[in-house]
Image (cartoon, rainbow, N blue to C red; front, side):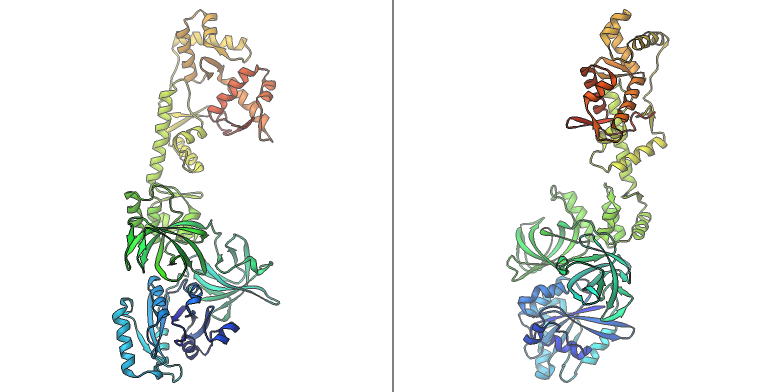
Length: 619
């Protein structure tokens, strides 16, 4: 467990921690020389069966960024106020930040009690309770590091604090210091936001590179394991210069996705805010600048809450519920705090009533299970993204999907409604195609996907198509998908005519024939022959590559097999290559290739044609 101590410069934070723990938290020569904590100082106190860690954050205004770096993953804080000086500038600013972080408990510790009388101390306590609502129910302790007054009572209270860290989640660790030790190599220090780490574990740096944990110091003691809520020093097998890792980087137990530069937050203002303004953004040990935009109003008064969007200059690794502190454009005052509601928020249509309703429901959802159900409304979401947003293990996500009655297929998660919506689109699109193209047997899988569900995950839509085939809601004939009732047949007279037509195609050795030419040869009216040939097309005997010009479908399949041979081992083929292989004229070859492009078997890429869907002409 980590407890943050904050307060105005020279109000006795470091001395209080030394009295509690016996450790002086100033660790940089400059700090000891100047008598103030510039970087984060740490001390440790063994209590019962655990070790409490204390972060002594700097009180001087110039070093506020360092103070903010110490507040990630913390649930408890001590606000230090000197009895003789009372509330000062940094006291107010630190209290503002602590209140914005919505900690479980803020303990008020009045220090230097030996320098003030009882009346002065009582007045200070009344002032703090009355002027700052967040402290109304806080425990107060009156102490003196010099005389030892109140130290035991404070220590006893600390021993009773409940452990709130999320050990069961994936390991997530914010790096705030990097150094090397001769004989050991690279060491990073930071606070574990969640999860646990053990010796020899493989972790991922922010850039995705894997590292191995060689040694662990947890709460300043050698250990084989480090837990969420602990201050950890990790010796990692990183064989390159320390400048390639910087303060604000992370270590994760799961491979990180891309950091986000656009988020939606639930904002609590500390000062009056305009609809849009530049801000400094602090998250864990990271700091960047960005633009804050209110989503539902043009102004926001102090102490008010609202939905807002943050566009970040530098992308950050953020997850749902992460806490952020915002300062003004020149970083001289705290504007407010924010809780991350949505990462990778949309660039368009972000102010619709439906979207606001979705965001409000996200805020109100108390568990990852409820929020996951919301994420999957009308969407399929990658499992990896869900695990990142909610910081879940693979097993935890599977359990949530099962509890919600949702579905996981390979890397995608979705619900039954989404599947019903997409399958309905597929069936409707195929029915409309039959209506518009009665001469065609059906569609290839790739083309049906592009017509019905282009913006959906391709592999998932193919899976739905396979399910529809298995359920006999779709059928497949010679590689073409069609509806169950899309069936036609010849009558007796037409069967006789078909034998004559077939004989003409055989005489022309695989060449395409025109409607007019066949009508003249067989003594038929052109319109009647056209209707007959298109009916033969519906039955799959003929294929029209352009209007009124037909190949035998079996020849089309033969041409497709030849094309697969031509493309074997290379990217594609040219029209001239196919013309030479078929011994056709160029015009007929171009018509044939363009037909294959239209039906989704091929795709043109510059001056060549590449195979798009090899299943279309698969017998």
